Length: 442
Image (cartoon, rainbow, N blue to C red):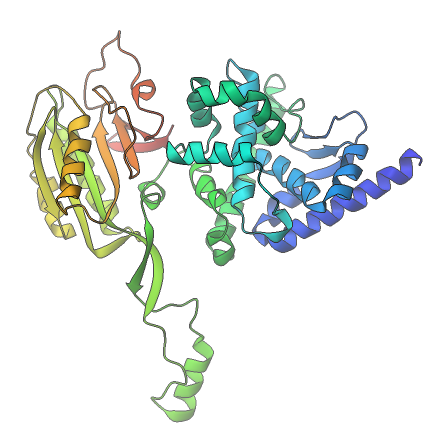
């Protein structure tokens, strides 16, 4: 068969794949329109430079013949690299591991999507990888995966199997070096596309967004230089029934038609209960060891109060436990209403001034849970500078270390706080500048 007919057939297959992805996930309309496609015999499988998806014709035809789902997944795999700007991130020391981590991130997103045109059986190595990451509570970003796998025996024992399973495309065209001006323009383009995609999923395609697994969660983080508490707290939320009109399942037309025809008698009453992701119980632990300064802690608590009061992720009956600790628990205050939080934050007095041992917080929570306390705990946030003794093993609940550089003077010889935090914890850096705090995800 001559090259031209093969190229045309390949374009038809790619066009069909793009249409199928669009029909299944219409919130991807903007990124799908932002990436063209071409048939290229010089590419080993698939590759993208941020402008075009290049596909090797023999690879495309054999994949399509085996299962059209493979073409859909390869198309989306490259598209997600663009959406998350993997093309523009500098590779770490081990380029092979870094590229693998980028591939694991996008494959995990694809596997989380409840879309028939992307479904395929998972291999044992893929299942083992996901289970390992979930057990260790590793967040799916290339940097977090790299730090975890770099020192983990699982990667060194299964490196070849992982690369064969997760590495779908070639990264040879990624704009890691050179062409700074064009690189910045293209990166800006994809950041704007990512923002529009996130907005679509959160508004017009709400139901599709709820089915999109890790995609929406990661977009909410990566599309913001300033990482807002609103999105951060959502990670601790769980589905619960809430007394609220369910607008998604309530047809206002029948309701108003009844009022028009029969006066005060609607044909359909609104449903009073709706399942929403909210937080019922949360622990905020404040490091009050020797060199802490009181005023920044109070300001942090006041800002926390303002955010929690207006946050859509909290029930009115939520419980917030405010702990003070150094090497022991100095105080445990259970807050059941936001005005109580305000009074405590306004008059907060630091207690402690010893060293810093985070293990006392986890031990305290474990003892409380055994005695029937913290029965609905959904997460722990620790405000600290990051210097102290950490537990060796992760807890059963999500844990975040809010690293506040303004709390203490960092020793010049000390290991950076970011590198001290265990891989299983969420790391959130807080910087104080011009009387405001920026919350940035590491």
